[in-house]
Image 1 (tube, each protein chain N blue to C red):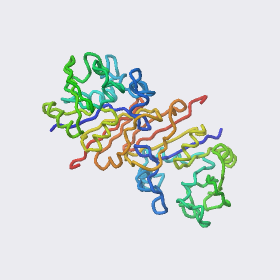
Image 2: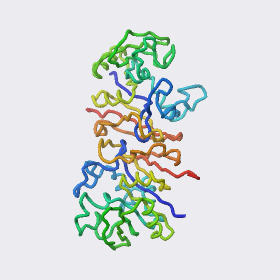
Image 3: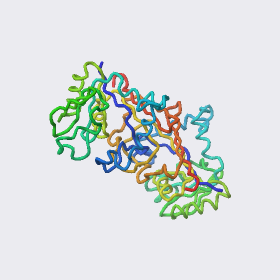
Image 4: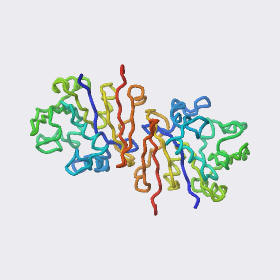
Length: 211
Length: 211
């Protein structure tokens, strides 16, 4: 069975997955790189990185994933839809290596990149997007890639089977919060927490049988 | 030196320290007892309880504490100021066993209870209240007892030396959030996280030297 999964989704102690304002120069606003330093320090990210708990979680990002769905705010800075040459933040060889579906109210033609990533642009509901991505994933799982609005929308629609959050011990105070409108998730998910020597805490949400 | 400390302050994953609405029947609103089940299961709370990590943290609640400061919303349900017979939630022998200062804009006469607790009522700023409580604490530490509004106010005023939060894996969605308006605390505090086998995560904030 093809699952929908969220991985390495980093939030501050006060629940923000990005700071503000988001721009070309500062994709995560005033958060800078602080939400993702834990990941940059792992072997998953680069040679010589750590191979402990953080890396074990980080590496799951790509296991058995056949497609990704991301929101418009993950694909580019505000206004990217007006730039016909924008091809994402990641250069010619993006780190997805699968069909990748960008949710936007202003779809454009698909873009085939190096390394197996092809960006497709969809104006669709979460359920429609997931069905399309599943089809493209060839029996493998679909990663819900964020940002926070997309994570919220898919959780609220009951379309997430597994979620891995990484809580970073900083307080951002403002930005986009992942939790708004998501009470009682513990009734649908088994939640595990494990603190890492690096200082972050990994939270895993696994959908309960029958939920 | 007399420190100001917060202990066993429980919050949901989304940062709420209480649900809503708060009432005589439901002091924590729709959160019920879920934020504190971890503590009720410890030996600190009662004979036969666990003696592991959760208990080690819980027992620090009373060590070297000479006074407590609490907010009006911790002392009673909305409107308790109109009831001259209200003496708190805790019966004749409250679990404080020290002078206990209740912040309220409508002070009343002090109440001497059994077991060493005397409730004093103060209409004062956080700094004034802390000075008064320190005086009463006889060289010992002062516990900032909550609720969330009081915790926020004391943190914002730079009046907290140590804070122990307990993050419970539930999503409340609404209530009173402890984090609002508190960005960048990590610049002032060393933050440690440790997950417990019970499922909660203990977060300790220790004021950095010179902060």
